Length: 443
Length: 140
Image (cartoon, rainbow over all chains, first blue to last red; front, side, top):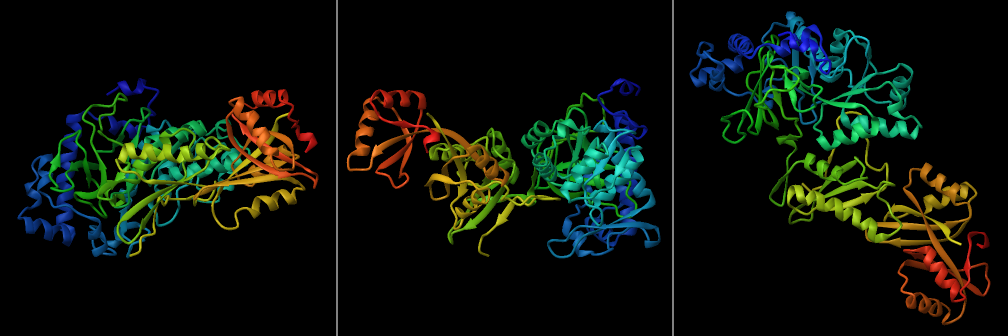
């Protein structure tokens, strides 16, 4: 239990002690909490009770962690169908905070927190920041949007609880972000990876080199991004780019985070129990196998989520992390079933396009996937911005760039897609979650 | 003797050409000549201007992707067969032309041919050895 004190590579905060709990003790704690949360859900939430009754099970049927497979799943539409407060397990007098999704498709989903829930949330955010090597004395610029979105306040209270200096700048106003970063001596930034790309680009235009600033780490999340993107971000800014994972339905950011090894995200398993299931059969899969991530909140009071299907595709690492944390890791999430495109019968994820594009030297990380339909079949065209690195005065050389990108994509997804080179700064820059797919198909 | 040529990437869409020209005009830069190579999807605008460094800065400052390459300009009589003579020399020497364009200059009786060779230095040598007048940037 003491070894971790000597590992300077992995940040430590007293709250991080739970990251190193001996496995047996952790499983015991999880079982105890699982039993309690299933009971809480059954006793206080009609939907959970009806589902468990329909299966002929009661909270008394949970004897070991594997018994979780007896419990019915929860899906996103359950949150919409019970809008706004139908899944709350606490009376409103105990609910101290509400958050909601943007609700781009119909009604938003609403999530709730008791005071205890907020303490847990801050603690998992503290552990996330600590895993990125951040501590008291760091200056954390929080570029996640403040408001109903969980990102802003989630990161904010976590950074304060860590003891860092928080700059609650929220998203947008890139020039001011850069000015503040420079003048306030920001050492870490939280925002979406795509927004950080915009910051890198704008700083360069302003003649500011990010690597000359005290900025050393980025805690990037709220959208899927790839390993190739990490390499680009780190090479162009000189910082370490860490992946944070979370979703409002579970708590917000802080469900899992990378450590110094940047190889998979540690799930704060004492609060969020991870399972991987086959997305078709919904059968649980063993560690190491790829499937859909299902999460159960083990300590949530106001809004417990039982076996929530995240739609995120990943796997749980079977082997322990060299950092010494005993909480398991999931492979970084670059695929969401919701984002999957079916092109000429082939399943394509935007992240595969990103990975292929960025594997070609000198290409811009700004791209958009345009879906079209000529009346008979769907097609995709990838728009990529021209860069001075790959530009030439010769037509054949420029066409060669498009061909090279197209070939790289084909190697990964096995179908040929058109690549269109567009002028710089013509693809919309995002200040929050990037929109990578433009659907121009006639409905 | 080599002349710097600016090449600029542009998408093939209506009205795209006027913007860079206007920007150069506003900066007081006179275009000696230009040539547009285009495909269905994109075009490359190739420009020869007197103050190429300033022009490059104006265009990159406006967010354009610009590259500078060295081209070779020669002068020929503006009469039938003027071009053929030069091309014969180039062919015989086995020089590879990436692309070329021509323009008449200052209403004289001479035309200027602009060549983009793989190896500009070797090309200049061959042309001069054959008595062809290679002109420098100053003369333009």
